[in-house]
Length: 487
Ligand SMILES: *[C@@H]1O[C@H](CO)[C@@H](O)[C@H](O)[C@H]1NC(C)=O
Ligand SMILES: *[C@@H]1O[C@H](CO)[C@@H](O)[C@H](O)[C@H]1NC(C)=O
Ligand SMILES: *[C@@H]1O[C@H](CO)[C@@H](O)[C@H](O)[C@H]1NC(C)=O
Image (cartoon, rainbow, N blue to C red; front, side, top):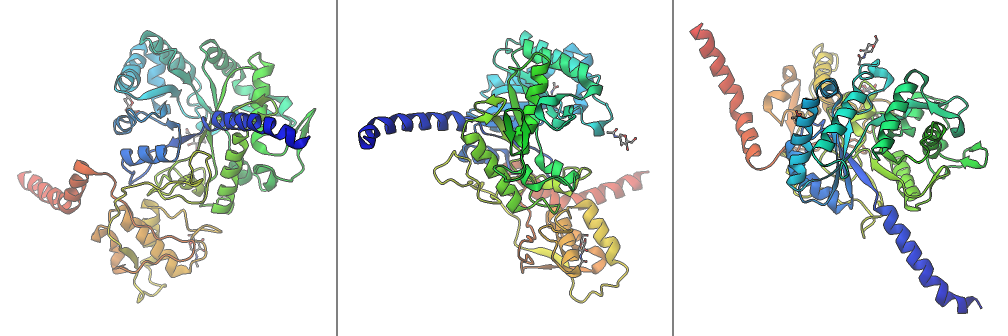
């Protein structure tokens, strides 16, 4: 009996599984941020996105080099409007039309597959003190108006990526979800506007932040398939925070009459350094858990079906503000130079792993370290380290971070090297009152990687930077002297 049925059932199951795989993997996107001192060339990143099977990319602006590299890439693009442009776009229809022409229409004509405009980025975060409460909605309306005028409104949708703190649940149960009371009317106006224009709600969901900011947060609940005591909400049972948080939003929408509004998860991810809970193991577990979760195509209890999401983030950004925490510079699934940090199966490639960036040009294999002869009591040491850390990146030093196990000398060398590399291995940047020296021996130990910087760009601009490195300081000096003489 069983074998008799087998011939009939398995092809059907096979086709269904193949279908659900295709449907579910059609979704995954990546956030591509630009707050780096040495960005990989845009063409290298676009190739990396494609080779890893990403189908969509979310940007935080619409920088020309990036947009040109995305031409004919086949990637769906969400372009972004930075918060500091909202006020202008809110008050000037003309400015919105110009923005849409320069940053949407022209690129679409050039072959960039722009599908969304993100108006602002988490503009209602409580840390912004309400700075963007007045401007976000009018800017959204003006951009939508400009898209209609440009004849693009069916192809390009507006949205506002919002932090999950725009809604809350007093009881912790998703079914008690509603929008934050201080911005509830504004949120309802925006939601209605999105609904009227067939545009999606975009939300960023971060279980890591919950764990970071609340020492009592149950660790297992941050991950997927955890065994922690689940949240029971009537007939739904939540064993992970993502589903519960997502459904708190769905309930908030539903309660206010917009239960069917499409939802995009604009950012989701886990950092790998800069905090005791930011490490490779947790990041791998979270991101793989999320990918496996969305690959099932089941969705959440309140919103069954495929989940439309963008991982945060593609690449580490060494110039992000660390005001929220040292982890901010370590969200990438790839390092600054395009190397995979851990095994992650996105369900998009045959290899089942991440594909590294190709054609990355590194600077020379040399590092700046503390001279072994220096006495640690030397009074110049502390100010030198402070200077290096303030101007470069020491977020991998600290309790339970990737370089947290080094001795004091290792710490100091790490800081010096970071500054030296960030300054393109300029000899002057390894001065530190004569406390430092350049070595050809890699000082990396265990999990602590002493970076070598990459060439920030290729082709013409690369030549320019090389010339600058060698000549500009001298040139500036001569010009200043000349100027002073003339005075
Ligand atoms: C287009 O976007 C870029 C990058 O965000 C911005 O600098 C520029 O001002 C925008 N163009 C217009 C006409 O608003
Ligand atoms: C918000 O207010 C606090 C306290 O007044 C201030 O420290 C902070 O800089 C403000 N942030 C912004 C973005 O205005
Ligand atoms: C190394 O630096 C980190 C961060 O500044 C500090 O927390 C740690 O105590 C230092 N370790 C040693 C051995 O000095």
